[in-house]
Image (cartoon, rainbow, N blue to C red; front, side, top):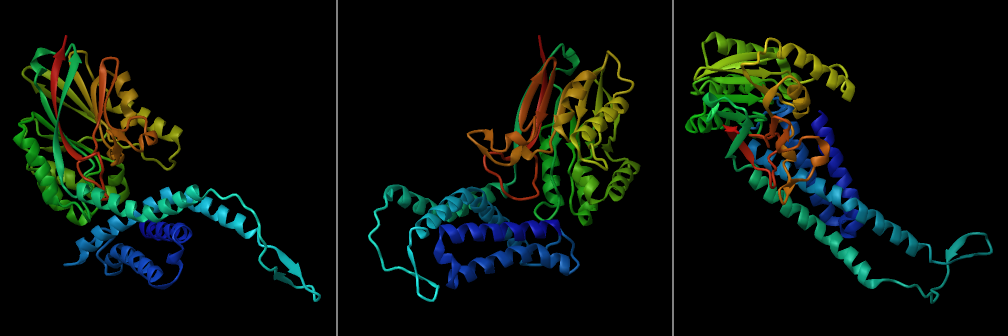
Length: 412
């Protein structure tokens, strides 16, 4: 229900901005068209719930096109709201200033009437006024174009990103060791199990030694069986190690934990790590892969989150020895300092989706996280934050969905 409330709120906010920038929207067919399309954007997500298909359900036939339209519409009106409210405030202030110049007269009965027109000299910057009007009128076109471009890019699948990781003092046996990472797939309304299978197959074709899945695998639990079957298509020699993200906690942890346990009982190559480690041996060299849980708790304050991360680190890194190379899997990239403290040479994370929007390679929302996208180095340790393999909203600009392939190299 929170999503429906958010969609409704954004639609209403955008309307109030547009009616200030584009007065013709206040009446007639333009207003009816806007509210008709707004209602359609809400119905795209409300109808599956009403019909018992669930929040992530899709109506047969028209469901997917309807949800794609709704996503594009919400992005467009969201951009209008985000970019247009300063212009709307400025235009409203100037309108009030002009209205205050209309003189009034008091009649004998004490009522007020507008005075006859009076020549009043007012200095008006016509060029600035014309620019403000033009920008206001162009804003909906800009929002619609941006939304369409992002929708196409967000629905175009993933790219395979090759990343070479040079680690000082890496044992020769691990020079050339390859890891494939998928993360933040969000199987649901826009992503299905076949998409997961394609991502796993991309790692198989890259002939990685180990595959990892760093959380936020699924939103629609009705697709859980098919999703697990897709993960089990892994053919890496060391299998696939997975961890939990916040969406696993939100959507229903017990069935997800049981699905991983059932997969292990079937002898599949997929294993879930929850504040624990798996020790691999590759060419005679031990590799400890540590997987930590997402720092969920009853409180979401920063102090509570950091304390939860600290507890996870204390438990998950127990037993590490000096002759092992330690690799850490964490859904939230903020775990990086805790992994460094305990000797992790490489930490792989997701969660941020890279903001899904970047301008000239710079994430637009980089202020939201300390570690937003790409590679970070500190001392002898490195962190890689993936832009995500899927999405919960099919909109991306400058941050393509990715399957990441890492090749470890010794850096002398």
